[in-house]
Length: 246
Image (cartoon, rainbow, N blue to C red; front, side):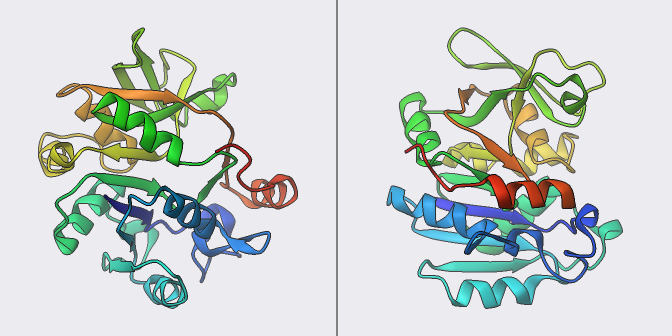
């Protein structure tokens, strides 16, 4: 299995911290945000290669970071240098797949969130389902739902419908940016783009994919910490205690 880390955004809401430094490499405790994710995933023993897709502005930061890791981590530079010229997450996924030549099951994750539970839970869940899978959590805030991917599921966790940033969310099940693609479904990203799926939010591909093939959504066994602005970053630094659920 391969793991692709999405890190091509510019995190403008975290300026000045991220004006010249990538958000995933900001520290929480003694580790960078992305370290918490990679070091946890590595405990699964099933991922044999990692890659980070980032922009030209931050590529060297990630190369320096990768050089100090125990895991094999490749850095893919998408060639963009400004927020206005970014490719969009789904296009970055396809760009990375083209550059890397991967042909395997894929774990695709945003590099700027942390979790208090192990992502190995998603990998175990996907193994039992035998399909591409995502995660879901109950979001009580109507305001936050407007900015999120929202999923409707059946009694077996299969996705019936999924929307990104809908003005009329159908449920309170939100989807964080962590996705398992089967080998076959990973090959459909290009088709999804060509078919007109959204490209800005990474969940847009899953919204399209779930209309083509079965995709399941696991309820998260813990909490996700989204670092969107300076206030939330400061709060996470104070609250986060690492992974407590395996």
